[in-house]
Image (tube, rainbow, N blue to C red; front, side):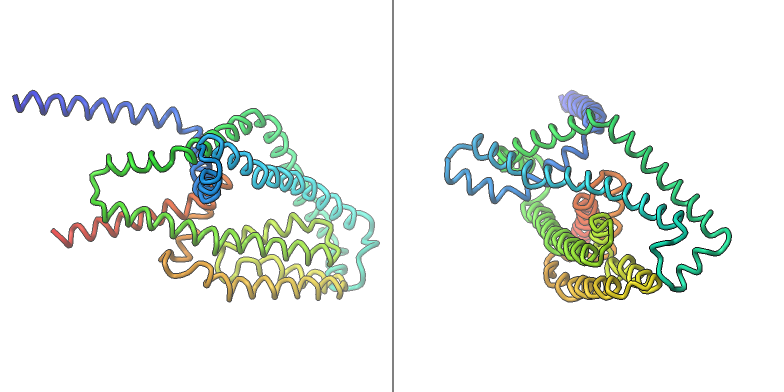
Length: 337
């Protein structure tokens, strides 16, 4: 009888593993969309609760919040991508114009003299031609991938809707299925909450603020592509200490070399404000509860960005933080034994 029970358990276990593998292969292509939907539903869950209390209707509350997600995130993100593509093209043409028109707009300075040396012009043209070819290729790829992207967006909306509506019940069922103790489960969920808050408040929110300040500084300075460089600064803001300085310090030096004193001072002021936010305000916003090392955030950010796209900014550090949490839990269980 015992052998029969063991055989049944083994058979069920084999079937379970088989179907889990098949299930993973089915959702693998849309894993990023599912994670994106989960993250968005978590971020907007307080808003969902407010609407649910007001209307006492789960479907209506989830539908309103999902519509707001489209308006607040998707529409601005689409506009930003369009503007970035436009500015990348403008930036390339602008630079080409400056180089090819005998530097009519270039004032006296060391950099202007350097550009006039034999061979320098050719190297710059070849470099920017490669960049232009890459941008053109990427543009075509984006156009042809529109149906796929639309499908992913629809899946994100559906995931957000159902997780907003049924997320509480799904989490409760998952907690019942896990063999972990209530204390361990609580530790995992608390870590998820704290890391998510740290990334959003201390990194994502700060990156957006720094990007806006940089865009204003570049715009006032007369830079033709302020959104492009502000976006780059926003992404680099995730790197501790040196992040935004990689862009604004060379930008100040270039303006000085071109003889544009007003532009150099404007960018310098913007850079000082950005660096002050990065140095003094970010640590306070991150807080100590998350217990997440900056290096872990940077690795998770860029690894997640490469693997999952934009949503990897949040998902990457979260996954690495969970791995650390599980390692600590495993060590604690061994010590207890």
